[in-house]
Structures are given as C-alpha cells and as structure tokens.
Amino acid sequence: MRPLRVALIGSRGIPARYGGYETLMEELSTRLVRLGLDVTVYCRSHNTPRSLGCYKGVRVTVLPTLRTKHLDTPVHTLLACLHASRQDFDAALVVNSVNAIFVPLLRATGTPVALHVDGIERQRAKWGLLGQFAYSLSERLAVLFPNALITDAEVIRQYYLETHKAESSVITYGVDPQPVSPGETMQRLGLDSRRFFLYVSRFEPENNPHRVAEAYRAVEGDLPLVMVGGAPYADRFVQSFTKGADPRVLFPGPIYGEGYRELLSHARAYIHATEVGGTHPALVEAMGYGNCVVVNETPENREVAVDSGLYFDARQPATLAEHLQALSDNSELWEERGRRAETLASARYSWRTVSEEYAELFRELAQREPARSS
Image 1 (cartoon, rainbow, N blue to C red):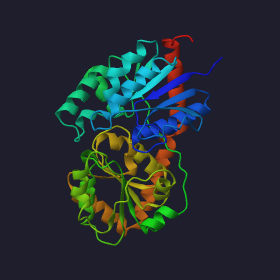
Image 2 (cartoon, one colour; image 1 turned 120 degrees about the vertical axis):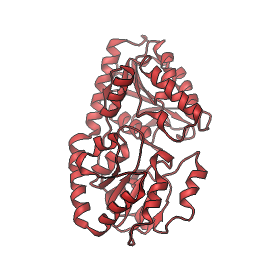
Image 3 (tube, rainbow, N blue to C red; image 1 turned 180 degrees about the horizontal axis):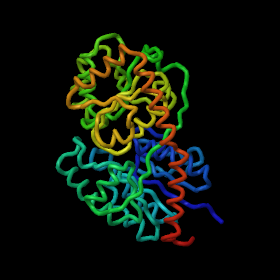
C-alpha cells in the first residue's frame, strides 16, 4: 500500500526564511514524512533554490511567481494548484485565506483540501482598499470551497463560527526547543546572555516595530534591544523608525536557524507586539525557550500566553516601557515569568501533536473524497 500523498501549498516554501506559514511548512512537512506520509511542499523561486528537489525527506517543487506585494502569493498559488491538480495527491493543505479562490482547481480533479486561514487578514494595516476587499471576499470563499477549515486559535474559530456560521478545527503551532550556547551571532552583535531584549517579527505596521522602538527610548539602562526582522515591500515604513533610532536598539535584519535559536536561548525577555493573527509561532517559540514574554494585549495573544505574559497596549508605548524597565531592574521577575512561559508551552504546544493532528486530518480527507487513481 503506497503512503498517503499530501501537497502543502500557499507559503513561500522551505527551508523557512520568512514568517509563520513558512515555519509551519517546514516543521509540519518534515514530521509528516517521519510519520510515513509522502509530502510535497510548493515553494517560490525567490525563496527556495530551483535545484532543491528534496529537503529532509520532503519533496520540493519550485515554481515562479510575480514578486510584487499584491501578486506574489496569488500567482504562485494559482500555478501550484494547477500543477498539483495533475499529480494525484490524496489530500492538500492550502494556507492563507486569500488562496481560497484556487481551492476549486484541486477539488475539481478529486483532491480534497483543508484551508488554513490564519487570523483576520483584512485587518492588517499593510493592505489598501484592494487588499482589504480581496481578503473580505476570501473569508466568504473560505467557508464554501474547502473540505475542511483550519484555524489556529479559539478566538479565530469563534469568529468564523459567529460571522460565517462555519465550523473549523483548531490546530495551533508547536515548539521544539533546541537551546544553543552563545556563539557567532551574539558575538557579532556584542550581546551577553540574559542581558538583552528580543523582538522578532516582520516589520509591518500591525506588528508595531515602530512603537516598540519608540517605547525603548524611555527605558533607562544599557541593555540592548535586538529587533530581528525586515519587510520586502515597506522600505519607507522601516526607515521611519530605524533611522535615528536609540543607539541601544540593534537592527541585524532577518536571522534564521542556529542564529535565531541562539538569540531565543539567551534573551532576557521577548517582546510580542502583533495586533492581527491567531496563534503566532514566534510567541510560542519564545515561550518554549523559557523567555519572559511581554505581550501586546489582544484576545489571540492572551489565549496563547495566558498568565505567563506581561501585557501592554501597543498603542500606548509607555505601557511597554514600564514593563521593560521593571525587567531591566528585577531579575526575579523575568526568571519567574520565563519559567512560567516554558511550563505552559511544554504542556500546550508540541510539534509532534500538531503533526499527528494534521496526519489524522489528511487521512480523514482522503477517505472522504478519494483522489484519482493512478
């Protein structure tokens, strides 16, 4: 009996080099392979080398796209769905609600589809009227076209249920802590263990990097704030808070892999300032590595961090500065909150559990609507 064949579509691809969906694709695909599934991840040519045909046992299909703010995702997903519709997959996972419009291409050829919608994308400040309209329409299509709807937080599940009368399955993200000793990354940035604050996110308005940088001006002391990230289509916005920033704030750009784990392993606290989305992988990872987490208070973020977090209002930077000052002055506070976060993450967020839940979902989908026979 051949293994279940699954396609993962809609992200930039693997290895993870961007955000939450890419982290999901890498962590999920490699674990599904270990569970005995035959997995293909569709990747974009500007993210993944065209020559990479296999990654840790995962099949890799690299396709082109139009690398612009509004067309990057839909063009690549269209091409990926057309390609996948000819490959006899038993099931597919499509991520990002804006890709809902392409789900019928797969279903028309007998491939059952689960759609992962993340948060309420139309609320992101980076989208203009066209983007907001596209995501508003996509929300409606997301409850009509796929065989199964996936949300990653109870708050988002409730939103789809109350707004669209649509049931969904909540599958969160996981963390697999792999602490590393201080090394090249910290040396390059001049950092000492537990003597810096860490912020990791795409530099987009709804993630509030500008307000985090502003808040840090009011914090006394010499501890650096390391702001890891960037944004491909937001040069003017990024310059608005990086040019002339407090000299204690470091902007090393995106950091992945070993360097990222190095920073997570040795930060005093992690600042999570997002306004939009469900469960954020970066927050889960920071908790899993035992960081005290300082969190923008939204229902989704509080669902994840519960009583382990120190909460602030991103629209009032002084509320963040107050917490950071306390963490600068009080070692017992960040140590106790870090232990609390690590315990919570260990109990609730496991990539092993996440991958098993997806594997079971794919088996159910394959039985519900078998793909074409080869």
